[in-house]
Each structure stands twice: as C-alpha cells, then as structure tokens.
Length: 320
Image 1: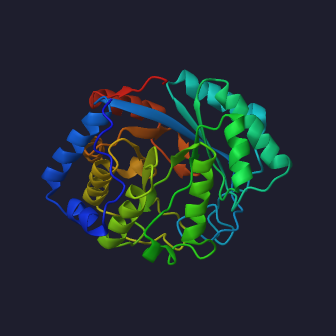
Image 2: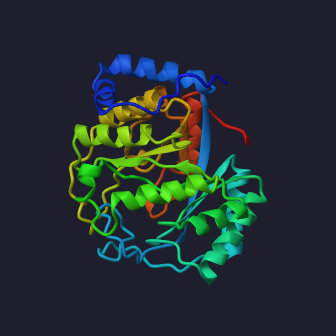
C-alpha cells in the first residue's frame, strides 16, 4: 500500500481546477489515484440502521426526520439492544463489513439512552464488524467513551459549503460540526464525513465542500457523497434533481484530493441508472450502503445490488 501523494494544503483554486477539468481526464486521473491505494473492483458494503427515528429539533432542510416539517415519518423511540444485534448479525451474514447506527438527535445527552448506545456499540463490535455511529454533536468525553466501547468510525457530515450552509440549516453552526470532528479525532475514532449534492447549491459550493474535506488533516477515512432524496414536506421537496454527471465529477474530484479515503456512494443511489453508478465506481467510489432503507429514505433491494455488483464485476470487500 503506497502512502505517498497525500496532501492537506490544497488551495480553493487547485480544487476548482481539478473539479472543472475535462470529464474524461478527470475520470482517468481519479481511477489512477484510486488504484494507488485500493484494490480495483472491490467494494465495501455498509449497512445503516436508524436506531431512533424522527422528532429531531434541528431544521436541516433535506431531512424528513426534522420535527420542523410534516413528512409522514413516524417517530420511533430507541430500539432495543436485541433488535440492533439481530440486524447486525443479519448484515454480517450478508457480507456487510461496516454497520452504522443513526439516531435523530441534535446532540448526545449523557444518561440512560447513551448507556444503551454504548452497549449496542460493544455488541456490534463483538461480531467483528466495523461499528459506526451518527448521533449528532459529541463532547470530548462522549467521544472517548464511544472509543472505549469499540466504536470504529463516527459519521458527522459537513453537508455543503460554509457559504451555502446557512440556507440549509439554521439550528447548528458549521464550526460546531468541525468541533465534533475534532472530538472524534482526539478520541482516536476514524472519521466518516462528506456531504450532500443536489440541494440547490452551485459548482462553487461543491468546490468549497471538497476543499473543506481535503484540508482536514488527516483526511476523513470515509467520505460519503449523498445525492439529495427529495421528500415531500421538507423545504427541498421541489428542488430540481441534480445531473448525475455532476455527482460523477464531484466523486472523481474527491478521489483525486483524498486518494486514500474510502469514497461512499450513499443516499440517492436508487434513482441513478446502472451506467451512472458504473461511472461513479470509475471515478473512485468504492463503498455503497446496502439494505432496503437508508435511515428513512429508499435504497435498492439486496437482490438488485447483488445483480448490479455482478454485472459490473465488483466484489464485496472482506472483513479487514
């Protein structure tokens, strides 16, 4: 595994030049960068389970779980440890090597529910899976406790550029997101951090998001690129769908800027054509979420994914 070629001092101008380069050149460079760090044709399968759904006090304009909007998502209290472990065992059996648990909280509160989550982390880790959580903002001591319980990764996305962010979320500042990432790093947990495209942002916003991610040192080990899933009742329900070539361009630029990070083709994949997905893999994506749902939004079925991987000659990555 080569480790040269990682840079953290990219300028916005350099990121812009990469993002705006000729698409086929961009894909070629991205695939070459990808092969320096990863086995071509290997894809990590992850599964995401909503362990506490709806009623979130944040006002993220894309999110059906926000208490601010009426989207028909039923609130559901924290799942039991048994339910979570059952889902994790099933995932493990199906070739999943990373299991993520998401709770619709603004921030983690110390108390009985956090203790239950720590117990879930211990249980899933004991199955030999990479455990990831996304629970909102974390303090330093909470991050430390999650690390001690065996948490492998923490997901906390930046969503978009600092400039566009205020139009999407008003209940939390960009700096607070960056602070949570610092707490995660300090605790020795790997970082899963990416963004969402298709929220009405400009090319410049996508360039700024990539610049933010690529100048984190070290880079997030996992970078999920989500395509907005438009949900009735949210402020972004009627935004124009994003052109898949913009997704592919964003993926390729992310791969060139962060060549050793696992690049995840995340939400919104079910709306993409087989050819668009193939180009995302060409651009350096090497991880997908499997399972019928991503928190509350639709995802391709397991059977469809098996067919897709077979048709594209891709193999699930084995446990590390």
